[in-house]
Image 1 (cartoon, rainbow, N blue to C red):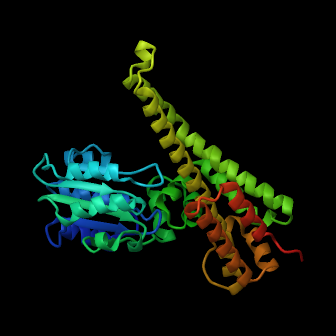
Image 2: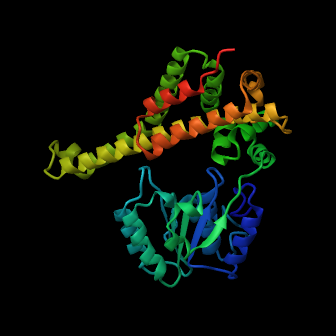
Image 3: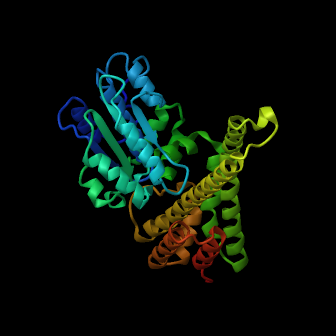
Length: 383
């Protein structure tokens, strides 16, 4: 095994990073780009493991028996820091903490590595703080930034980074990966198609019945949009389902953070709240509220991608395109949509879905309102 084994469909990228890890073409700053689910952060972490390992992450004991490989992949290596956020943005305070960390010498004899996931979420102030650190790097310090595209990062930052562009894995590559994890052929094929190259989503669809059932509910929506009542009901169901799923994800974490805060301020032991406790609690609750909102938007966004796949399939059927549908399991619904509308209308529908996505993510329009407007626009015309 090697540190690269979990990366699916990225052979050219792996070869380039292997070469850099061996000392040819190394840079102090890297920018990993690629579509959602392509494995940007996983690739950065694998590269970090290869840089910290004396054998480049490919020795006979790598990665499980190698201390450096194992600790990097487990997130516990002393010289590898990973910044990820549950909030909508990464602020200047978090970046300044990271910059201070970068100014220190590596504890080991190899590299000090700092990985910033979702670098596209950096605020303007955070970008300015990061730029200075990248412009004047310390010896043996390596920055790794992850973002969907190069356009999501300031030109002044990306011009100082070596670009690593990841591609979307093919359906066959994803299915093969799932089979290697013990998934049966039929479920692996379904998950590979439905995930549209998103590795994390594919694993969830393959091994979690709840995730699979929720997706089935979403892809059944377009065929049901025959009346105004059905449109509004579908919007409500999608919004409430997203909120419930987000609450399920965050509830345990919120409770643990609250318990940790109480313990830190002695609320549990002494039974009273010191003066500093109230503002700390207020900050925590605000951060948790922001995280819950992002979680809900992430769940809704995933549902919108699934809706787009239905109309994409309808266009493919109507135009006689070859190849399997993303939603072969609901082909009858796709055929009905293709028969009741034109490819041009379905292309418009995809545009309306992306407009709703932009309203929620960029302009802070309430989720329920944006979804109601979208569902009405998607309504199946009377025949």
